[in-house]
Image (cartoon, rainbow, N blue to C red; front, top):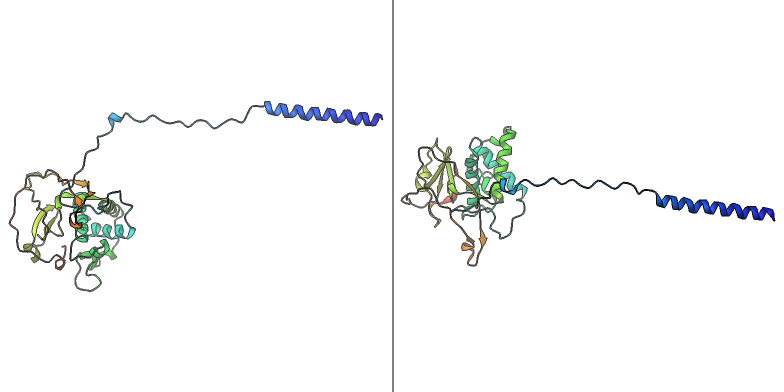
Length: 265
């Protein structure tokens, strides 16, 4: 009998100890929580440069969609980067953007391939003469300058994202100042940017931009297109807000020429 009472007493004591342990654990301090995130205050909004509204004149963006375009295909970017690098590696960013603009202008012109890579390498597979000399003269087999390549890729990426070079308008041809190709007499001269002279073939109804260069010409501006879809036939599917141009003068239009038959440089 005493053994039974002793066991009962021991069980009660153990149970009390267990309950006390639970209460003690419950009253223990909870584990420290994570420190609150520190958010630095934003800089004074008034100190940020104001966004300048951009306009578009003559030259059209790579994308005509109403909504922002997704990233350009890598293949398009690679081909346009090669054109900018090999044709205008030593030019200023404006000069490189002008070359990129010519490629994109050709994509939308009749008589040229309808893709960036098709335009850049037109004629290289047929042995009929390349539109861009680097595609046929072995330039691509040489080493690349990493910084210059990165700059060319940046310019190409911006062009494919919708940036336009208004100084060259809808030009589809160019050559360096060191040569005078025969086809240049049949085209309208648009502008000179750096060491390249740019031309259009005269079939477009857009006006030719001919800026009279002052003694110290300002650098041509690289503008971002403000284009939106509007009603009307496909040919009129983009509404353009033109920038106020530099002083212009008119030039008589020479005879029209077939665009696809003349190389770019």
